[in-house]
Image: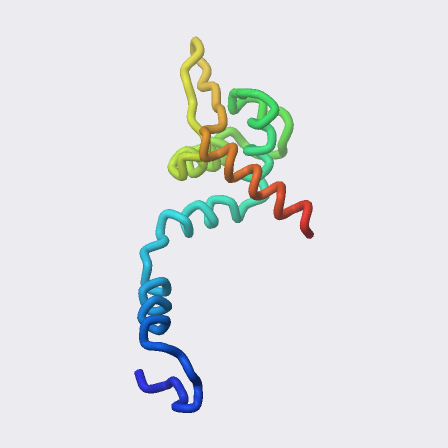
Amino acid sequence: MGAIPPSYDISSEILEKVRSLVKEDVEDITFIFKVLSDPIRIGILKALNADDLCVCIFVEVTDQKYSALSYHLKLLKDADLVDYRKKGKFLIYSLTGLGRKVLDIVMEVKKSL
């Protein structure tokens, strides 16, 4: 405290608002960003936007092992970006509503780069 120079003009209301915003809990958002920090996971989201898919398809089209892809899919599921359903002996993955929204935002950012 006391680091704001006396010559810097800021109201106490704004200062309190800034203090509150900086201290706000954003763990859920940071978790999603951490999950999105791997290009494989972004690729999985993009593929699931085309169709619901089994992990076996990702094994076929990537150089990733089944266990690694299962880990990526688990993180995406933990972030509520994907979900799955059983179809016979297969788990079929799909985007959640949040997953679609996040992917739309990611693709918008990519367009801006």
